[in-house]
Image (tube, rainbow, N blue to C red; front, side):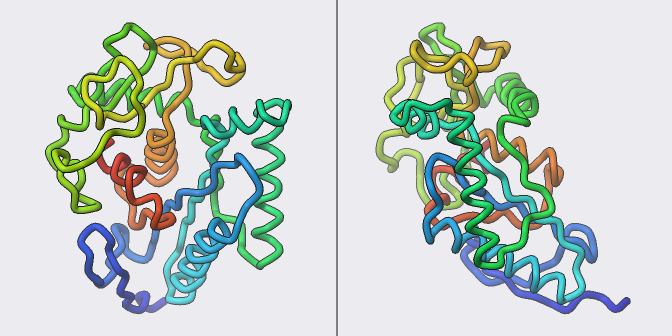
Length: 249
């Protein structure tokens, strides 16, 4: 079999089109940030999935062996909030909306990815990364004694490199939760709150809780594609803070 044809792709971090060279010759690993299954899919969700379906088909046609991983975020603040508002179990809402997404993909001809991991199936891997970040001085348990764990943004000098921002110039962080050392530090582990379903919390070295959004994708991508893979994609709206925080993690 002949070598795959050349291909150029726009690298959003370096902000230029570059000739694509896979890490392993002839093979391409792609991770795409998939949906948070909190409500029915809309056109934006389908557009993102369609883009990477085209990526997969085109690269396959060029002679590459492609492994496309598109995750499902099935535990998140919005899922819990929407389920409570509807008076149903959060797991039922997540499952129903997951089926709705799959149906929408199918109706417009988007193929299933090679792997579609659920965030709730990778809690152990998330905790392992968090523990490593704490050990290396990039994360800390909240100063108020809660089970919250935060990434220390100032510990990573390159923070903001994807979106060309400097930490000193950024506005306030993602929330004003107590126990943070700095406003821009972001949640790796969220302490279980009174009134939240007990089923939406897992034991951890820091206390009962659940993962932050950003750590979910870091764990799933590394577990399924390795620490170094070819393409990380998602909607443009995810560049900050989601993809920026993944790079830091």
